[in-house]
Image 1 (cartoon, helix red, strand yellow):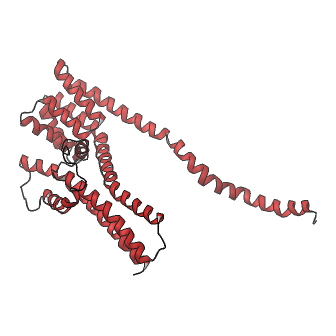
Image 2: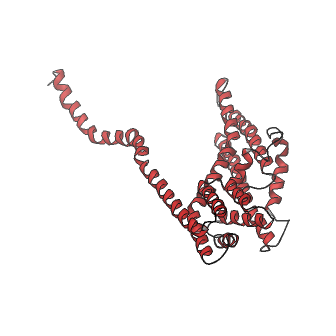
Image 3: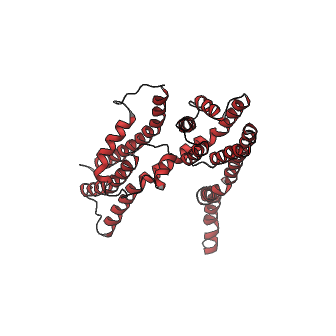
Length: 314
């Protein structure tokens, strides 16, 4: 087997794991919305093709590996569980699958790297071989952490970008005479195509209220599940408006303007950082090439004319 074939096998293995992790995230993110549709009667229940079926199968496959790294207790109420909720993953088997994938990658990537080096005949031994295997193991162990952080950032960005529009819609609904629960339900119905993440969170709040949970607790759960600062401010505003008897519609309008102002300030801050970020590429990549093109011919001419004159050959 040639070195190119070994490289292809390694790339296929990494791509397969990446596709599995991506499918896991997409399936888990869509499972909550499908469960809500089944509860509300908008979608028939089909256990044979439910996303939870594939999650359970993956959890069963990784259960022996997960036992090597999963915490003995407290995994359900830990900070990791909150990160799963922030990423939209609410499956009960998510922690088990997560730790199973981490352990599998941490053990599998070094084995593949060692197998590839052995078949390729590369002269890597001693400390170099150990460092390479440790690097492969660390990459496999921290790759799920990177994927989870990216999933959280993507979901929170979607919520932040669409949250002012949902506040405007909720303000219009409440000024038309709807209550808080009915307005949130209307927002969930209208935002389902533009921002499914925010629509799902609003529906979960309505389901908690239907189940008899207090409004302040259901709203605080909304802030905890999203992990977005704007949503936390919205929850605080609604609770204080209920407590002091102020107009919720007017408070929503003011909060919507505040959220838009904060989003514009973040965009201006990101734009102000661009010159500093471009400074190092300009200095180390662009300016040397530019100086070489501009000064190169002059330096060559000086070497051809001045150096013979200084040496006395002319």
